[in-house]
Amino acid sequence: MNPPVLEIRHGAVAYDRPVLRDVNLTVRSGEVVAVLGANGSGKSTMIRAGLGLVPLAEGQVELFGAPLRRFRDWQRIGYVPQRLGAGGGVPATVGEVVSSGRLARRGFPGLLRAGDRQAVARALAAVDLTDRTHDPVASLSGGQQQRTLIARALAGEPDLLVLDEPTAGVDAKSQEAFAQALRDFVRHGGTVLLVAHELGPLQPIITRAVVVHDGVIAHDGAVPHPAGHHAEPGHDHVHPHAPQDPPSIWGRE
Amino acid sequence: MNVNLIEIMSLPFMQRALLGALITGLIAPSLGIYLVQRRMSLIGDGIGHIALTGVGVGLLTGTSPVLTAIIVSALGAVAVELIRERGRTSGDIALAILFYGGIAGGVFLVGLAPGKGSANLTSYLFGSLLTTSATDLTTIAILGGCVLAVTVGLRPWLFAICQDEEYAKVSGLPVRALNLLLAVMTAVTVTVAMRSVGLLLVSALMVVPVAAAQLVSRGFGGTMTLAMLGGVISAGAGIGVSAGYDTAPGATIVLAAIALFILVAAVGTALRRRRRADTGPAAVCEPPECVLDS
Ligand SMILES: Nc1ncnc2c1ncn2[C@@H]1O[C@H](COP(=O)(O)OP(=O)(O)OP(=O)(O)O)[C@@H](O)[C@H]1O
Ligand SMILES: [Mg+2]
Image (tube, rainbow over all chains, first blue to last red; front, side, top):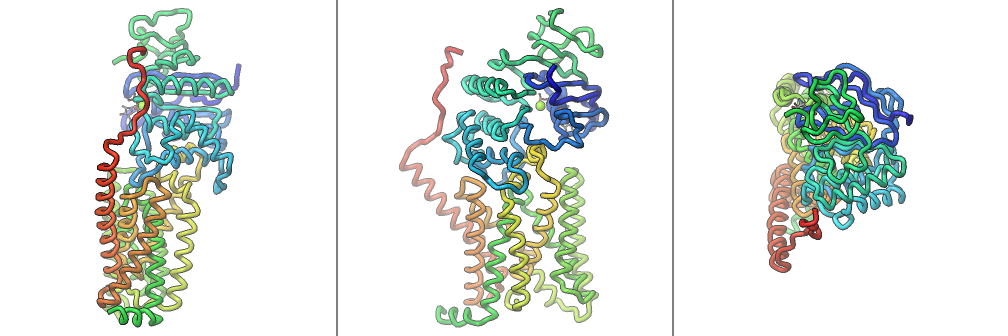
């Protein structure tokens, strides 16, 4: 079995009230894992906890075999947040935002080399935004902004991509292109953990799906079918804590 | 008035005043752009308030007010950063207490200082460019150089932490250290600008040139360059006008910056209208996808 690249053991997270109670998730090298669940079930919280952005009340996180606290190889991770960061009082071009994806590779305070520029250009081409490089991000549509964030993550040439709803608001053609980019990424040895509501063209490349529900991982295995058609004993591994009736792809709403 | 102006500008103290103002005009927007990007434009104003307590400490203890202003405002800026980092809703109140405590503390301490005078206080609140000594100018130049080294030299990293702090963390950047560095540099900038525009007007020179630059620029780098240029132009024009009409240099510089903003806004609007009329609707759209197929 391939080595784990991201592992959450007995993870618990509480904001004002508990969101995750006891999450166990292992993503191994080469996998493409989809995280499913209802709005507010804690999907973003789980992957953000896995990256150290949300503190765990209990449990541990390991990245590439190292405890989070001692992990330093951040250039191996590309993160695509659910939405553009709060910053943005000043206009920034698509090229500038995507270039910041190289900073982990450049080191601090490293110089911008030709290789960095080429990686940025490749990432922009992969999401088909090359001709928008010098446009302000704010002038882009929501789907194009999402693609900018994907390009930023790709620019760092990571081993693990963690994406939070990368295809939300992205049109069918761009979803196909994105699926193709992910396929290439995986073929070159990449690992993917992505949150999604609708898998669409991504479906064939997903190797495993986990469903977050009621603070735990309620399903871990094959991609569940939409409500009603989930009883597939051969594939389904229902977590012991899960309620009797396994949740649908949407969780339980 | 022209001959007069040249004559006045040939005086050494006016030249020092001009140089001091130009340096401030260059560095204040280079730092302010990061505050604007974080939508914290008014923080510079608050740090200025806190710096006044530093001035009070300096006058009271007989040490250099610039030194004590840097130390106290740096401590204040770090406190502000820690409050911001927590992201507390009560942070707002904490900031208010810090800022008004700062200015009240300053006025209080200056009152205790020997040889007190409201003239003294006014010079820190609204600047005192004309009394800039050669030593003052050296201090301003050195501190200004430090600020520029950080704001321009570390631009990609500071841009990243202000644009998307969480992403910067996942990139493994020393986010905390960079935030604290930015906070300290804000304090240094405030102290440098204290001499030229005064603590109450510092924030204007940090923010207004950036606002003007944004009206015409498309990216962060471009905004920064234009803002620094605008800051220098405002400082030069402000000194010129204040020498010609014998007005307060600090206030005149700030008014010049605002005038520049209005000018850029007017010209920008006119140009955009022109361009629209020339090219017609120019919505950039991607090639249509086949809706029927999918
Ligand atoms: N910063 C926060 N402070 C307080 N509560 C939060 C915070 N972030 C998320 N929550 C709460 O935690 C719960 C899970 O949120 P999360 O964003 O992880 O859900 P999600 O599964 O990603 O939902 P979506 O499908 O809408 O993206 C929600 O009830 C939300 O209100
Ligand atoms: Mg989410």
